[in-house]
Image (tube, rainbow, N blue to C red; front, side, top):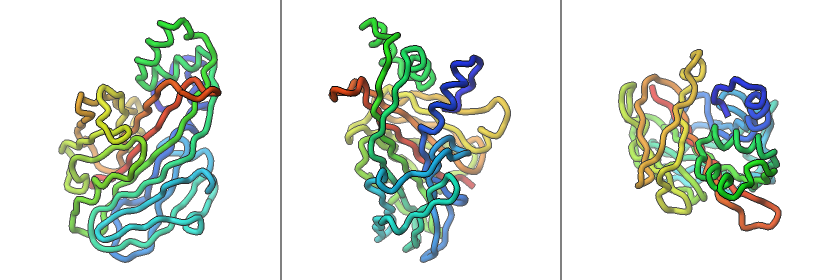
Length: 268
């Protein structure tokens, strides 16, 4: 989480949950045709990775572009420090989408910490349900998995491959090509859960520049009934959009199951 905190409990949650967020990134999202390139996984915040992603947790990785369908194997990854890198070779000119999904993991939080975490992620429905059931102070066991995407551009010609679904449980689908945008333009997404629009869902949006400027962090927005959300590109550079969708778990050992989604891209 990167929301501003003013109390000790929020600082504790920051360190506890910051390694809970995953981004698929690149130093530059502009590549050349038929060139050797790398993407990398940040497991932490948008600007710092806390640990690598072990190969046994990576599932359904893929990179799609014009007449291009690359499914990475374990040999295509390597670790450096706390970052996991993915090597690949680009294909034809166009706009590409890359994605990685992870196997589920689990976390246990006290009732107080869990409520604070829900508040900062905008998961108000879960908070209300726990209050109604009188379980706000009870320990919560959460099963979670992460599904991350990046949109990048190979040379100049723009194509519609950026909107190709990757069949993840939850995903942001761009409604316009980010590589047609300039500062001041509007970027729009549709959020899908199990292939259906996810309405009234809190999402968080920011850019590297916003995170670096004092007092400017994430902007929280709500999707429409159609699952759509839009925002203004107010500066150039690297951008992301993120969300968490949480439901009660049907498994005996867990109280909740959540699916996390992030998508990154760049605007010149």
